[in-house]
Length: 256
Image (cartoon, rainbow, N blue to C red; front, side, top):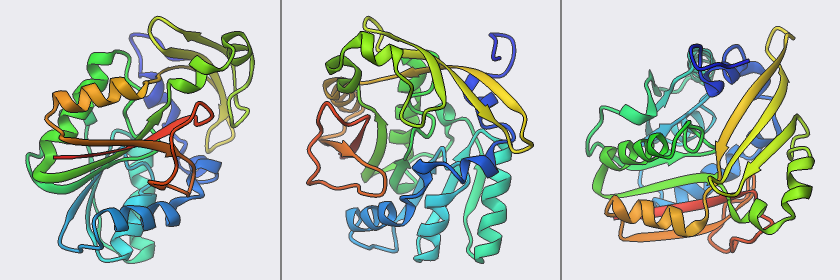
């Protein structure tokens, strides 16, 4: 289990987990998601892309296959090793770097920044830390850049019976003992997984859900002028998908 003196829960989760991660349901929509990303930048191959929380590089590598210049950052050595191996197998060039999303050193270097499938945000222990990730993403963008992120939709647990929600398993059926706090919009749960060596692990998760108005306000504080929020479905990102209380995640597109 994670504790305050040891690795954070998200560090523990992604330690020796890359192969298992590749088998999860939420990784199956990569091709269609990249189709959407390409359309959002008008298929402009001159645009440099930063993939924050790139994991095993599934979006980064597919974008590189299609001719884009991509930099992927992640905090996990395990996930980055898999990403580098996959890029080599695919014979594509992606710059993969180990970095903390709260303190990205790039400034005005990218035309597009991605944070897909909770790539760092909103996994931090405090709201201030989560905001630091958004600040880093904004700092890395050029003046006319675009940010595409997916994050947990606070309307989902708010709308559904809190009692039913906290007593139910998560979508993938792996977590139990959920406790959703209406004052902080944080869900604390025990995630039971097996790592790449088959060892069972119980991890104390702490995830922050956001309602659309919060996300809009945070991004406006970072000087984004146009902020669009939609429902988010695996492999089916679309501007036609209105956000509802049935969407566990939301898709956010912000532009200067």
